[in-house]
Length: 299
Figure 1 (cartoon, rainbow, N blue to C red):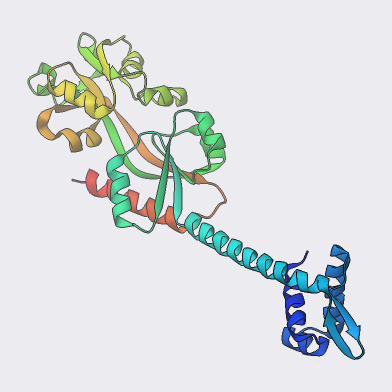
Figure 2: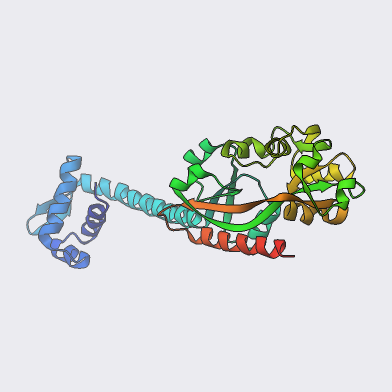
């Protein structure tokens, strides 16, 4: 049933004159007659009849007026709901992130209260195949993603040794990992980011990094997230390997930071789908996030 035909029926029901109704609708009388007939054929009844030169409405036509009005109101209500939903969707950004950053999310929401941010955790490569996220953010890169996703780097950070301030390692400016083979380490727990990162060949956690340097580290305890590891380090629990800029922001001079030779530098990378124009909110988010990282990490 054509919505426009229903509207035309209501005009005809009001005018009871094909000439007047067609003039108001800006269509020909023949088109109006054809559309009314199509409705009648679909419902198996006649809406109008002729009494001499007059057009009158049948009982079936009178019955249909009420239902036609309800139908059009419901359609208008539905259209309004669809438009509201579209507007909400246009102002909603779905992101997938490997290492959630509540501080960044809060800052973005505060700067752009008109936008809604939906965040889901990235735990394995399969998540990226079924996600409706417009943007994926992680430290490092996922080669498997780059066939269908473009990327831009928001910032970089380097892995360093985090040590208690009174630890012998803290007095050094830099260190080779092999020199730490006899040290006690604090590593990531089983829910840490290395569960994801190791699958992509990105060595973030103590065990993978040390094994890459040729030794098995003595991990005396594990924790998550990195800020909790840094806190345990500050209390003398052992040393660890964490991102320098991120840890310095949270811990300041409560721990010491010793560069690793050779350096291990990773990007903070944002992926977005190839060939798909970024939404207004996605563009705002990427611009804000890049400026946020650059502002914080430049200090």
